[in-house]
Length: 130
Image (cartoon, rainbow, N blue to C red; front, side):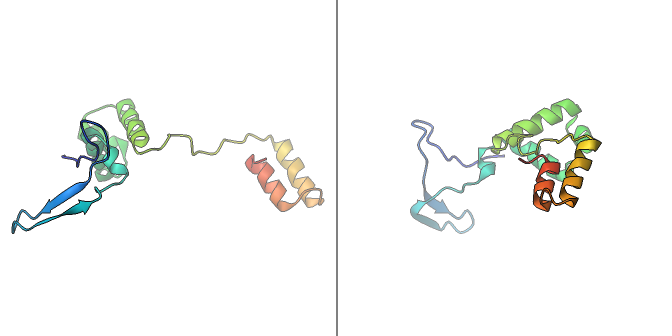
């Protein structure tokens, strides 16, 4: 899969498209056009192919293992690389898991029912929000 250049290979400055051409009728248009941008432009050809396979297999790793002939740990590592290339940090957006004992939960609910704390305060405490 070929990708559009977006950075100058000499000085690493942003490139601008200056000519567009139609392969069918040979019409050409000259001007200054911003390059097509988006998160997928950052992907290497291998990462783009992996993303397409992920979509084709509906995100099912068992199907991807068969399709790509690679193991689950390798698939997982490639998915993490793909997410990072797209600007995401895997696991960072997951809220921390709150581990309240049964007694702590009951105390929070009792405090709410007795009017010592509001519903919103109870919800935050149960969700682990301060």
